Length: 608
Figure 1 (cartoon, rainbow, N blue to C red):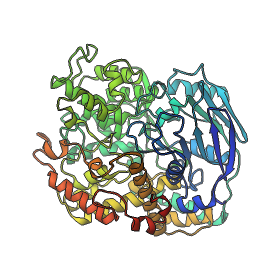
Figure 2: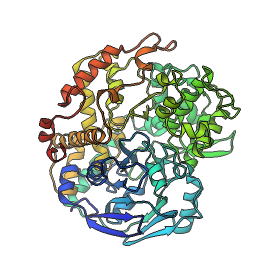
Figure 3: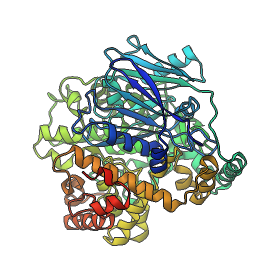
Figure 4: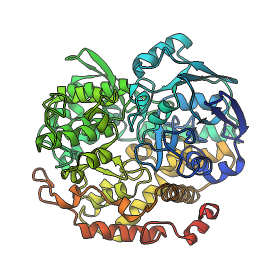
């Protein structure tokens, strides 16, 4: 098939058997690749009620037709599994160079099945595929081990690996790559760890067949040219995602002290320009990227280096913990990267624990003697270590995620455990931003921002408005925006450089030989969205409206400081948003797709 590697690699870790099979053309037609392949294979192959940490669960790694091609940002792949954090659908996107190299081995997907009896790593060199002993690697940090593996095999080999967090079963462990890129959310690294897979090391030299080489060249060059000519390119290259920090602080969206407010009095010390001046050494991009958002940083205070921090980490490890020093935030970033845990969920868990400590729900006896107060960076560093090591007590508890931790601690702490469906909310405060709040509530993996970044629309039409147009905007974003994860390309060129999305259509057609308009692609996006919703319902008895509710903090506790002080979204408006959303989606009042909707989206086979 044009645009595809052509094969799926299945690795039975229990028996050690490795097989290849052709990528099914019908699946490629109906789900395209990346996140689409992941959702399809998860639903079809992982049996109902499978234990996320058991042998029946699978880890599905998939590229898309744009992955590894000369298209801006074409370095994305998707990791899909049943989430050990939420019990539902998990899908995490990884940038860098791993995906392109995987495509050049002739693989569209790698499916890890079963559980290995001992630590292993998967080695792929074109058609040479082996499981090798990783006992000596077990316990090593991701940055340390990646350097060792690159030294052993060569820089042309690309590595995806886990740290102690994944080995020890932290429910939000990440899969890391390229010294600072992560498939971070939902516990994909946890599943890789329980399967005893420490790393995947691969190199490929194969060509990817293209339907129209000259058309592909022209379409790719057109995309790179508009990126180069974009008015926002220089600022984006300079600051990357940290450009968002000051904006969020100014509009009341910067998470502060466990989302109790949206503006931080120490915010100016963690803004992008401060970071650029104080710690950034150079810029770094992923495969085929004309607008590198990655920043390599040096923290003089600690004599350490890290890629980052990017905005989400600044929000969750900085202002959300009351930490207003960019070197401290970057050091927390480094610890999470080396240990292999998601900075968003880790920052949320520590923020919740800090609030519990300040309210007297947790004491020094619970915190290993740490003064676990907002603003205490050293205490945060210590807790990152204890979480990743699953140290008995609070470290192990926080490693389960804030939903389970709050359920076990109780004493009212459930009301300020900031999550949806068990997924810790990423770094946008939504006390009075109804479109962004709805985007979090209905996101297919839990409270994650990348599916529908709707907060700018809140400011455009009125942040407290509860109107059908806002709901329609969220649904459109959910159908369209994640399609970049399906195609295997970064969305940030479209988002931050305002690239005309129609320029991607001729590139996709030239590569695959199949014409698809954005209308066609959005329908596939809607199909995948509904399939992932069905997966939640299949795996969780009683799944429905109550699972879409946000933290009570966003409808019961108006911020006391910042530009959103005194503002809140009322509970009745939260319910109205869900009513309108379900109606526009073609779902029942409990949030389940109707048979008519499933038939329209050609999902009738999954209706049962």
